[in-house]
Amino acid sequence: MSASWIYGPLISTDDFAGHAALLGRTYGMAPRGAGRLGGADAEALLGEGFAADLQVLGTPGVTAGAVLCRFDGPPAPPVRDEESRLFRDAFRVIDFYAPDFAAALEHSAAAGFPMHTKEASYELAEGSFREAHVEAPDNVMTAFLSGPADFFTEFAQVRDRIASEPVSISLPLSDAATTTAFYRDVFGWGVVYEYDFVDASFSAMLGIDGEDAEPIKVCSQALGPSRDRTYVNIVDYGLPADRAGSLLGASVPPRRGLLGLVVLTDDLDGVVARAGADARLGEVVDVDLPGFGSSRATTLRAPFGAPHVVAQPRDAEAILRADA
Image (tube, rainbow, N blue to C red; front, side):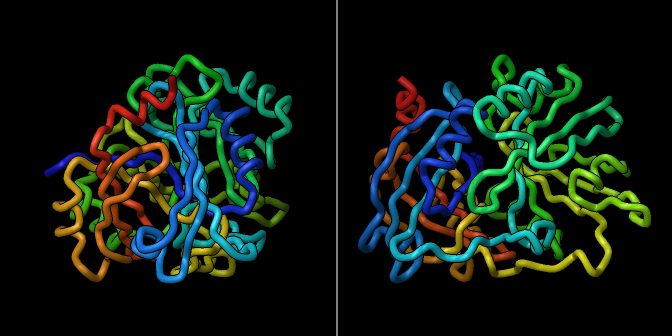
């Protein structure tokens, strides 16, 4: 099967500056390109009646980053709000590895982005891990992860800075099997890591604490092309029924927030054929994508509804040359 990998999250926003500041100052991303998507190209990739400005950010030296998308028209509601922040069926957190956890939090706070809630510290088979969340505009959540250095040699390409490239994007689901099959059959992604734990500090970080609160059990299955590429972290928080609502179908333009993914591939025709017509938002188009250059692209909808913009750049090396 061809190679397909996640470039990074697709973030819908009317605040380019706010997201660029957080991703740049805190996580070390740099601009890779900006431009406009309109006309037939926009309708094919974003849906009928939509047009948008794009800003592409990247972690220098690696083919990973984030794509910001500002739709025309008045700002739409965010995918997540305070009530639905833990609901299933929408992407939730963008994770970055921090080799020096304390230094990363200090750096982020000095840049104007303090820790959102409490820090979590939990144990996995590989050792002790720490996690802290930092909030972005539009209710987008990001996270610093830290743990044994030898463990992260397999999971992060950038390990000598404050933060790595995006390591994973978490996704709580109501029906994990259907989405797992979609990622496997369409992109060829398999399970690269699995874990589970029960920890009170993690529950507190999510705001599930108090005298009567039981620590939640977290179960995770990470899907991607390999451990050292950005992967989707399909996670089950084991939440009680009154907290386990669904955002199925909410991740649609022009809603703001962590809308979907940008996926790069070396065989777009194969990806489209395996996805089938029902998964396609529009036709395959030839388009000059900011940050990626001349490309063929289309948008697929995952079973839980989130858009996955899939592009085959004609010159993949141009992505890294944008760092120069």
